[in-house]
Amino acid sequence: MTPVPGKILIVDGKSGICAVLSEYMQQEGLTPVVAHGGEAGLEKVRTEHPDALIVDLKLPDMDGMQIMKEAKALDMDLPVILVTGYPEIRGAVAAMKAGAHDYLAKPLKHHDVLRVVFRALNERELKRKLRRLSSQIQDKSSLRESMGPSDAVSRLSSDVARVAKTNFSVLILGETGSGKELVAQAIHQLSPRCEAPFIVVDCGAIPETLLESELFGHEKGAYTGADKLKIGKFEIARGGTLFLDEISNMPLGSQAKLLRVLQERTIYRIGGTEPLSADVRVLAASNWDRHRLGESDSFRRDVYFRLNEFTIWVLPLRERREDILYLAKRFLDITNLELQKNVKGFTQPALDLLLASNWPGNVRQLRSVIRRAVLLADDMITEQQLGMESASPKRDPLQKESDPEAYDLSQGDLSLKEIKRRKIMAMERAILTRVLRETGGNKAKAARLLHIDYKTMHSKVRQYGISIE
Image (cartoon, rainbow, N blue to C red; front, side):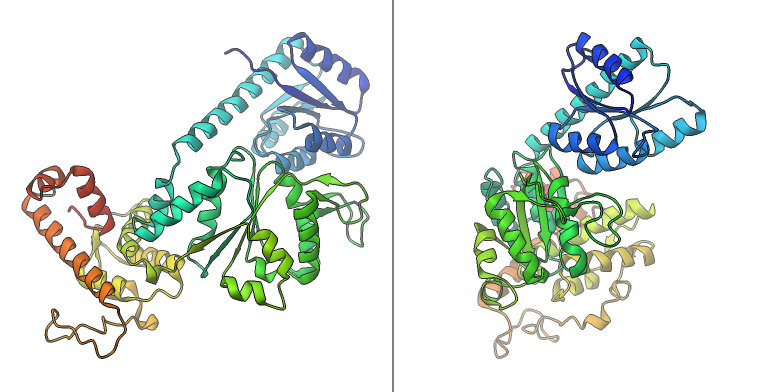
């Protein structure tokens, strides 16, 4: 395989070895970059963005394994080649397990070095091509695959596709467990930044005293306990996307520093004086609604307006009930694989219960319920195995037990549109199930009998979680 051109960072404490390796690289049309020491090497990783790293295992200021760990935090796909003067099998195995691409022993031989470097460059380029291909084939259907076939998800997918190609900051609003992080990932995957890191920071899970260090990093000795340099999430996400989950939990002081970064596109590590580029797209999410977030005394309005270049609302599961059975079937299939089971589907009472629940915990709650039920079930998941008594899911308030076709509008819990939608869904599912039984599960034959195309039949079967068995 012909090697691709690349920039090779060489980190060694001895200038002679750096010179020899540099000459090897230049002879092959590669670009060598040299650093004498671990701290200098990591700074080159941040500023030069090399395509491969050759680093001595023993350096005066830092261990080569530690350099590799921190370099991969900056670029997870960076191939690292460790060099040592004391080769042993146990050390090689430990290095490979820790994430090294390869392991070279001194004295270094020209042919061995170039073989390893070329292989590293070609594997990195292959990963890039695969990622680009994956990004190209991911379109609006990817969100529908993971979130459901409802019109609400279709509109959400359109919004994601529209804003992904821009560099807008996006505010994603929705209840806990509704899928905000999935939306953020989809924006990143469809954006020009898809090959760079997607980094998540949960602003509600990190103590206030540590949040700024987590975001911006700190210099060695910046405060008591800062015994080494720390790279912040803004640096790690450079060129990519930083997702600030539950941004409404961020302290006011940190919000002010975030605003400065968003406006100036530079950051300063705690204790540092040198400005660092912050080429990062920021996505933020909150379980507050837009009015509460924009008017709260605990959240700065200027930060809100700066983040709110584009807003996406993720509806709760109870407002997109068409997705419930689809997601239940999807979680059933995933858990079957995980547990190596063959639970075939849901009994009708179980399906009715799934549709009747208000799902206060949204998709996250549904996933947990299905996982537990698959663990308990042997053949079909029953109403009892769903274990949802404590959630007190209501029966349809408009449906009389004595006559399931009769409706009482006195309670006013559902609109006419919602009543019609539920009845149509129930009727569609019943018809599809009956025809599939009569055709022995042959979806193509069932589609012909119902005068619909096969793709529609396949989509409906998935939507309603109909088990062919």
